[in-house]
Length: 114
Length: 112
Image (cartoon, one colour):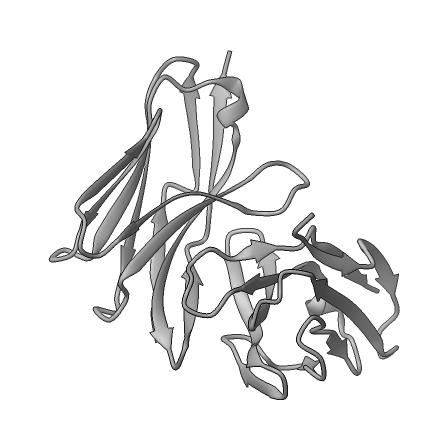
């Protein structure tokens, strides 16, 4: 089955600096890569995603990049703010029958220091 | 409001006492799944269901059961809970063919 590795497990940055979280996946059939943000005590929520036919996608201060050949993808957050502090999960997704199966990474606790 | 609702939010129980965590969604989604979240391990899938009466094992199904008698409901059943099932549980739903998973608010289970 799919295996997703995520690094680092914890990341502290100064407010205004950039943060980068990296993930690798093993199954070449995976073709959709979402990122979820989980604030303390809350449910995971989708913040950005990328499909395998795209190399990069940006939404305001966050961007994702995908290298299909190397099977790795990354989340980039620029101009970090205290409200960016949360746990971030990457995931790799493939179709199983008619439904998408999600395999998550182990999570990164991002702390933005004021 | 479109949502996935889990109950209870918090539960403390004793080893061996059967329990059920309910999950209900009002978005008419076909696909539903259960995850457990443990520190350093991320979200691991327990069971999933592609539609009514269709369920299958995820990555960590041991000690759990599910049922899907109606499209909106997908309960998680622990027939004989053990301390290693102490965890944070999330239910999620997705519309077939679409990509975004919508999560419930989570159930923190402690088995003593």
